[in-house]
Image 1 (tube, rainbow, N blue to C red):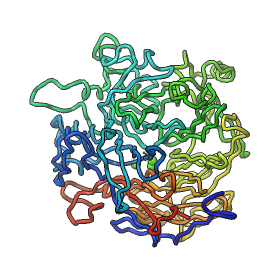
Image 2: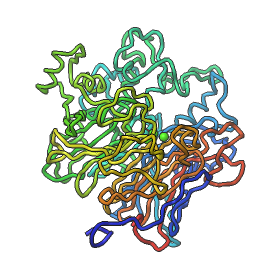
Image 3: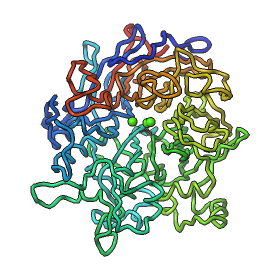
Length: 605
Ligand code: FEO
Ligand code: CA
Ligand code: CA
Ligand code: CA
């Protein structure tokens, strides 16, 4: 039976009011403690965090990165009090991580090195101490993956012409992972990294003309986030680990330059957190797009494994991966993630839906291609150009698919559609033009998780202004109230006790009440019990943060939540949040928050 006892579970706390304070708020009876903020030393020489921002690029590689996002807890020997926390560091704020903000270009090399080492993944052994407080251990399991870490390409794209570079002329290896947003994990105990807005890290040089669709369809342009290629080191030659971010034709063919470097990004990456020497593998069979995250359906021996992943960009799609092999104990990603079928979703207006195969050998795929101007020559071509293949098959353009979550008791799937303020043409699954506040869609597969048809409805619409919602009623009939109004849903977790945890990524203007949709306060996390319709605000974050990433220990008595980019309007020396220290003048630091119930009970109930 469920932790809720007889009958339906109920939320066992009073809703937290919305607000604009620079602190964490949780319900009465709960405690929230910041843990592992950006800059915390975790390995190697354990370099101390320098509060003035003066840590070097090499020191950053031995500390927690910035912009904590998706997170997962891997128990050690099944424990709920000892395990490995793995989390994403999505991006950086240059006004916060450098002592005086970024220098003029070309910048000192070490600024780029520090930024690249603040990206990636942190792997940290943690244990609940005798005093009941969680602490960091350092026994050889701790590790950082960064924009420099060597990774292997696996699946159908490995070795293809699309991924040959001067670094790996055979097209088998690459360096780093970028802009890792929502998390994922597998039934066999590995972590799945998703590469989201990687395109913005590459500068498209004019030598690439015409621009191939594998760059153009992903918005690799002349605009670039951080200019890591535009650095100087006292006149010394710059290593190609930096210059590769300038996507240009400089050699006789692709094995002599980095024209293909962006094709090494946009993948799901798997690694084993229990093995600190494991080489991460980019699982190309799962498609290339702006992967928000990746969510598994609970595995069943004798059936395929199934994962969902959203492409978080306006009018992009939701995907499903189904392994060709049936799951058996002892199988790993090498058995299950390199050989499978990638599907994309079509949401029909009558509440039904179809999964369309993105498989070069599929009869329907070939039939669509014969009638389309969009052509493919191989499965590697299909996968590198996943978005184009989905266009060709007639997938439904969605309002920015973010995280998904699967009800572990029913396999019903929930997906956040965060917003799409530019939408001009509605469809029933994305019914609001100028959708500024987002919604959560859900579906049931027609039978097993690998089914190719489903039925869907809308669980809830974001927004607190009933006028704004006029005419849009979710199938539950429920509008949001003072206890639970939110906008721009993003992170999701469906726990075994029946609670759907919903995290928000509202814009600064939405938080400040500067949009036509009303005043929402700081980003928040809500708890919902979809079976009863109960929804309550559980946590409100500090000033200008995003609340993103949540995991429970197996006993549900500790929850880890990530707080990303508090004070993201900061200027050098003028920090608009001082969280987590809450000392005036301190620079803001992304951090994990540990939430426990004061009576030691199950979180949420
Ligand atoms: Fe990194 Fe789609 O949020
Ligand atoms: Ca997100
Ligand atoms: Ca978001
Ligand atoms: Ca974010």
